[in-house]
Length: 234
Image 1 (cartoon, rainbow, N blue to C red):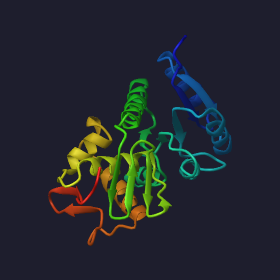
Image 2 (image 1 turned 135 degrees about the vertical axis):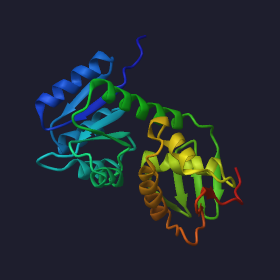
Image 3 (image 1 turned 180 degrees about the horizontal axis):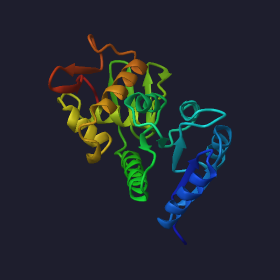
């Protein structure tokens, strides 16, 4: 029985760019799905459950950041934002919306494929974690179900936020440096891009109701790194 092809949803209002990316991806044997606006993208995700989404930020009806936030309301599918702007502010907005990575236009075929492979590799790696459960105060992480709860309330995390929390939890009681976190959560190609960590750490703490100055879960050790507070049962 033939193996299932990895599916990629490409979302862009420019048909020429859609066709170009489809050719690039199909050469690498990906199954390509297409959408020309945000609403159709949401429908395709709901119906087809793609393995990854390439989402343009600048679209006429609903911008990519808004679409990404709506995706995160019902799906943890990895999302790579496509942007013509290289400024940190635009990248931060994308990550705040729940994106896992970004590619700046114009990009080469090699760069696009490398980014897709890297994000898929991270996603697949974290989906294969050992089945276990971890608790810290009223915080519970169910690694088998990728489920995080605070008391009786489920915490809705993006795929990146979950990987970040999971990595810190699996190293509970041990200080990890920003470089270690970035390499483990994003990959070697992102070393030095600490803004990714800062944005996602702030977002994660906000969702956990955690205060960096008086933390119940994740402590910052100035000039060193981060540590998940011990007293947990695995």
